[in-house]
Image (spheres, rainbow, N blue to C red):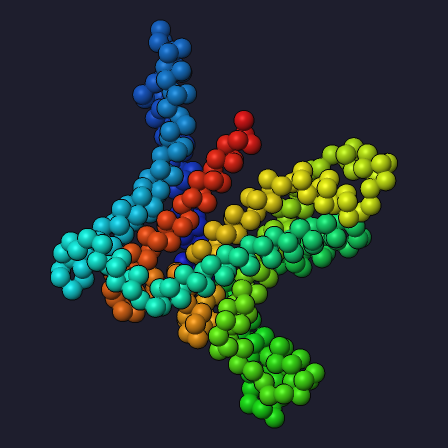
Length: 333
């Protein structure tokens, strides 16, 4: 079957199944379990209204249980077992083995570098673009172009940027944009940018910053538009210059939005896999935690250490998720 036709069938069955579930469950609730008629009509309506939200939540709860809760507990169990001993319980041995591998610490170091630079640069560029594009006539066009990378998959972005970093032999025409510029201005030999230790991590980070800047721009642009005009006008009357208005009036008022954008991008960074796998596969000292986990699970087929690394990623992500949920609840009060 053609993939496009298969995808269409999947959409029809999926959407149709959801509609059928919601209509049929409501019909059963209102007509079979708690019919709104007879002497108990009022009590039945109240009971039906109490149960109805759970009918809508049930598919999501089942999906979360099957695809999130169960995998977490199963991963924790596997991280405490040994593949070579028929799944025998070995306690924390897998974690000790993982902590003793240099590749794990390389992945941790690189992830820390990504955490320092990518959220900061993406948020900064997004805020800068959001502010500047509001002042030009063709700002919406500029925003659309900057947001466009968000529509590209990480693997697609990796392919595009591998062409940007491409290097051809010296003396031949360079198709890689970076090497073409470098050779043109310096006259030196083309560089294999993705094989230069430490620096290659920054070249990989540039791809994620390019993608996430559009996300940050959209959220922060909406926040900037939500600032009351009265406060800006009052600052202008008091003689504030554009820099003071931006840093002392606008930024403090959207501080919570900036933090949400920052932490959201941080979650993406902690789970980054596609870019590294497609561009370097963790070679030349570019290993990250998610790629390390993939190699342990599917290359060396050591599910114990692979599951242990997955638990480390989850432990790093969980505090940020909790912080985001708490902030969201505070804003809803």
